[in-house]
Image (cartoon, rainbow, N blue to C red; front, side):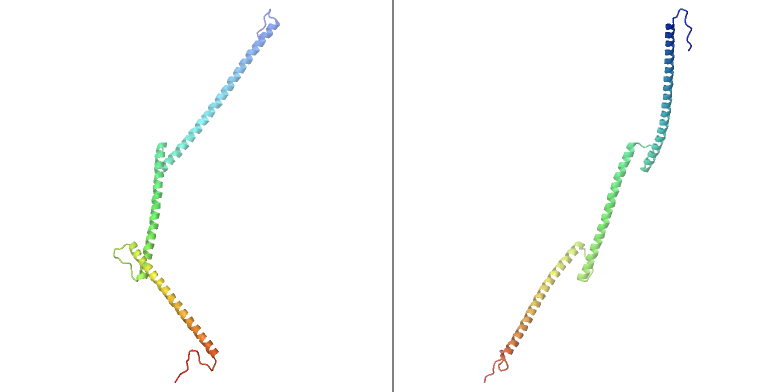
Length: 210
């Protein structure tokens, strides 16, 4: 902007003042244009950033929807199933898993019990055969009753055997005592006979009379 020519009557100070005013207005206008340009650049940058964010969000949303659909397929639900439906299905699966675990443990316990029962019956049959020399009777008595009868018989047999062993030991002790007594008596007799000498009769012999 050019400065108009001063009037013939305008003083120098007035001309300078007028020039300063024009310069100030030009500076203000320039500043406003710069501010507008800066705002416009910032707005353009913000718009680009928003567009990029929206694009990224859209991509992330598509990826999340794909993952969600895959997860829902794994639990036998539609890809657009709601969170409530997914939670309900997961609860059902959790309960089903617990029930299956309980059933599996029960089957294991039943197999173990069957093995123990079979082993018990087999040992009972072998013991019955060994003790009585015959197979288990099929007279309607249960395994427990037969085992009880066999236990009482074995207990009685063991008691008799213990008594027999005790009596046998007593007899052996008595025989040993008798043998030791005889041996001691014979030793004493020899000592007495030796002490009596050849001219005397043994202590258990008496001279004949008449």
